[in-house]
Length: 104
Image (cartoon, rainbow, N blue to C red; front, side, top):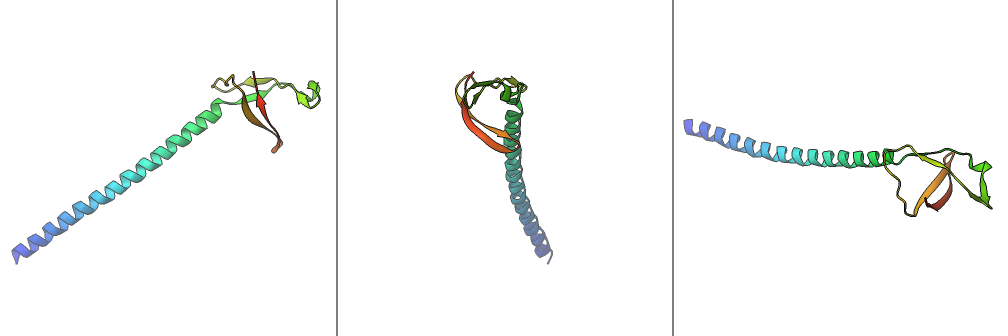
């Protein structure tokens, strides 16, 4: 009778240790995924904030030829803009106006 009570306690103890190990493994995996997700989102936000610029002239008053306009931009972000040809979208009042290449 005494051995059966002790044996039951040992079985419950071993089962609880195995269950706690499994639950902690799941929590560690979930915490790692959430941490990675926050880290990646932080990098995207940092990149977005570092590439900010402001238009410092009125393009309606400075036409070059036809429909082309000269924009003067001031880099107000922390990241230096690349000197290669890249594509950007121009939005005015929430509507896309152009998709074009830019050069420096």
